[in-house]
Image (tube, rainbow, N blue to C red; front, side):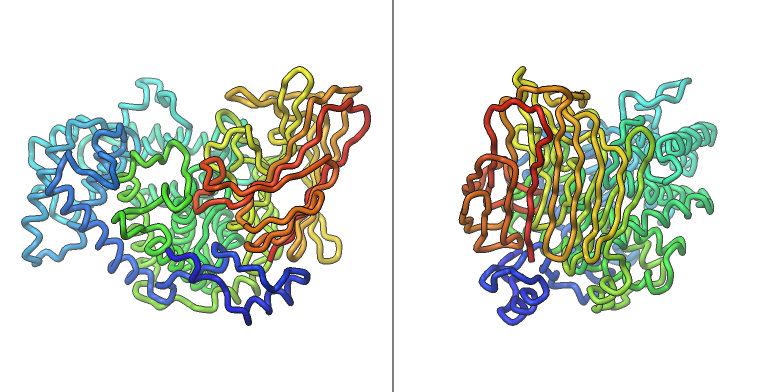
Length: 629
């Protein structure tokens, strides 16, 4: 994707300046929020048929020719330890078979090649999601009358033994083997698909369905969004997506979707619409983002349309947004020089879970998501329909300028505030990252927005994004992340205010957050057109010795000019950033450092502010203000 082509003309730039107030006219646009996919006017079905299947055909022929020795951009996928790969291969290549007409002269050869590849992978490690993908495709091939031609009898018998949910669920206790609780849904899906294949009775599927729904009820509470942990308070894109996945699994396996599930799905759809935008950007917080932040939106909205939980007007524009997401994938995320999705080059960074060693499987799973969500849109009556081109105007007219979505209330509050300002959509996430994620910036309480504020995958807390880090005299490092209470929102004129408090900060260094009650915090975010301000009041409990405070901002803007503790930028969406309450600041280019890369592109400038050693015996106010176009 040539990002420079998205920069605005001087005339449009002038109009934005008029809207935003003080933004200098010379500043370049935000390529992430201003981006319009080249295929934006095409129906989603055409985007998928003309592009997704072309990519799958490429991988089909490459696998058929190179087999286990296949190389993609310098990586050997079958030597990478990707435990889902055999199932993803089966699903991805199976879509090619299903999309080939029965009278196409190429079909016999494709079936033979598929059979050979199945023989090659049948004895490879294939776990959980890989088992699900394989089972789903076997069922589809069976329904299409192609199974016997695509899989040899001996290979199918092996698959019957290997593709089993019992490989990761204990018997007779039905407990997961060291896996997150959402894997009950994976196990249930596999069990139901085995029933539909005639491989077992439905007793196991019934127990797993109960287990899945009991967990969802226990850790989603009255608000309907699932905690990713057993009550630690980690909510991210998957917490919103999970109800859509459950509904999808029900439909795939012939289980009726209940009214209660549709009610919860409606809540997820509202969040997706609140965050929708004309650029096709998706969720901006949490781990494993990149294109998965966007395909999550596709899943939520396509199943919502199919099940009728959207109004007719919402359905039209949800489809328009979904088409933009599919179009964005084919341009922004697909790299023709690699013949692959690209989450690892061009200044992009993923978490370890989606590392480049999984490149083949990532292509297959993303293309699968595009294909099956397109099928849901087709079944919802939108096949080959031209998407509405007034999406931006509709979002501006119908979606709230500010919304608060609650995840949990109790000892600690967990919520998501969404603030819409023209083309920019900010997602202020207020949760606990919990075990393994509490120190990583994608889970910080920040107002994330593409091209303005981003987390950094697997960042740790060494360089925390936009949060003051206190280093105490004993060496402890404290961040204001995990223990949020009393979230409140209000409006003052044209400003939206979000406030909360923390009676403990989070001590860093371990796998789990640790409460540290030496300093308390009151935080207020002020959100208004073109300006975001965070004001923190830190109050010591007694007298505390502080070795130093550090505050960093990794910005997508460039051409920094420092004036005291105020930085102005020559290029980028953020044109000014200032800090109060710390002693000094500096600004320097990131020079392409891996430490400062978002899932979708590189940060250009690092602004670092700090204070030295002092005795803290009274409240300390630390404030930063960001002005953006």
